[in-house]
Image (cartoon, rainbow, N blue to C red; front, side, top):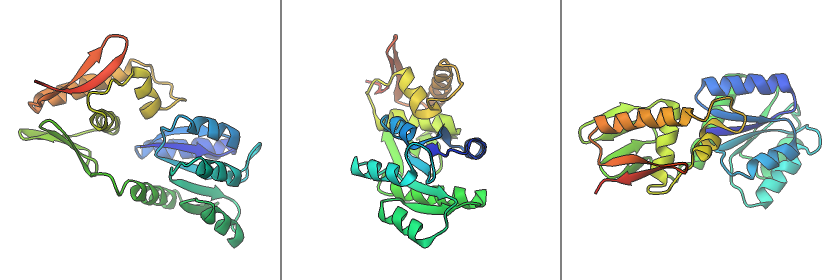
Length: 224
């Protein structure tokens, strides 16, 4: 799951990114509202943590523009302000939740889980392609012959492939979607994880395979 953290206090931003990454999230960080809107144009995020007091454009204005643009991305407002009127303004403006600084990291993580769970409640918990299924609740990839518990990155890649069967997905798209724009990972990390998934599919006697198109990307295809 990929989050955008919008926080102008860089030490806090770095701490949030580290804790979220440790808990299995892919994170991009930006430091002002204008930059946040630029990152959101990619449309690749599952949620956003949005500070209110920021330079160039504050969080309330960012929230307004995001919702006016038709995006339903889950948004958790994060601010030092504790006044009731500010909380009401944020929630009435379309925020999913509101957390006042200072806060406990455990509470932040719980609120992120709650708001992203609500946003995906309408999705099928199990994806199926051919004789393979992926359980979104347990990260389990299975077939009639067995199952594997996938790591976070393996799960995200397999979910992306199974959500778009037969579609060609570029290596760059995988990098943006799963590792994020600011990742220091080399692009060949995509091939490494594709290799991991291919081995698991083979072990499961899957009737689907991940095909590579030279210099174009990868697609999940049902074997004929």
